[in-house]
Length: 152
Length: 305
Image 1 (cartoon, chains in turn orange, cyan):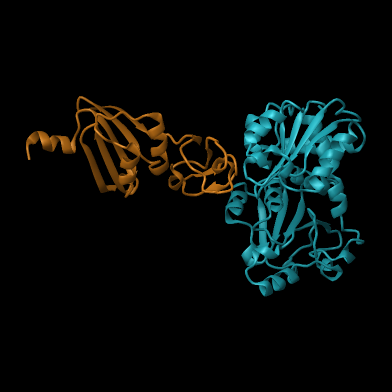
Image 2 (cartoon, each protein chain N blue to C red):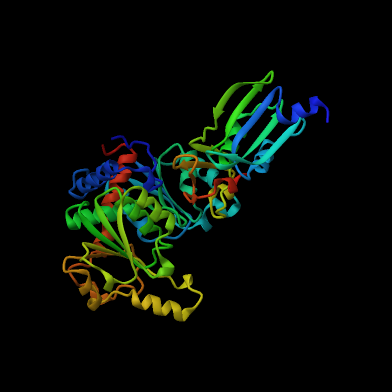
């Protein structure tokens, strides 16, 4: 393996590193990122973590996260930290903010909810403090304990 | 406190102070302080699902204060049958009236209607979800009959799993200093997510399976019907329903001062020989639907301040 290749696997010049993903949700995170042609994608599963016990890490070259993607990530990896890398250095480090409401991101599983009967944008309200939180459908008011399972 | 143009969709949208304000206005209405307050106002009652008490009491409320009523009591006569969406029905009707009262079998229908309407919407029941004006008239009745909403012991008996009235009432009572006693068979307990919510609010409650297990007398017992269709086994239904039936003998266990409430319609969960006892207040409770709905109609149309 060339030195260049090794460097690309373990460190990236430019892109995003998503750290502190609760293990084993790295593949879910990749699914949400929907990465296609940005560059090399590195997935690390089952690292030791003081905070989480076990954690996953996902590194993607040349990727910038949009707000919609960050909101989705908040559902599967509310503990995650986002590192923006430029010229091989971390230029920005932030925690994921879990929004107070999710618009159009989740589907209500209640078949008798108006959002499944008419053309209505779904809205779910967060209840509780992250990383442990539930969501309530603004319309039928049902409470859901596993928001990540409602992702569209 | 501003209620003008505000929709009444869910008991969750209200805090303790707002609920008390509404009850105070209902009291004023009942004392005759707001005659003809709704004169010149039009209410549209859109009942996509049948209802007797709720629709009639809203209509009575409007007429009693000089207002007019338009609407329908059966979706078969509305354009829904032609395939019109609820949103389009609401956008149209909103131009004919000052306030809409909506009952619909789909959960969240009222919230959606309020989003598209330019006049306030009052939810008169959306599927298994909410029926906030029922809860408000329940609170009004408890306060009127006992003189308070704090320092009370309130029992709820019957099907606590499926009943939207008890879910909503339990939530509302958690704003007050009320000890709630949930009495039901294990299979029809209050849903865990609701209990969790009550715990989160530090509300005081206990669960028992039978009124014989009551440790202290109750101030109010709220009875709900156990529905046959919730059981696969008819024999099992008979056994369960039989042990939750109230008669003169059973009410002795509740305490001498206990008032008995019921959202009605009653089938046989309260024996008719209870009707003439001092604690039977369920018909007065139903009558209170009128002043409470008068107050709400007045507040959201800006006619009562």
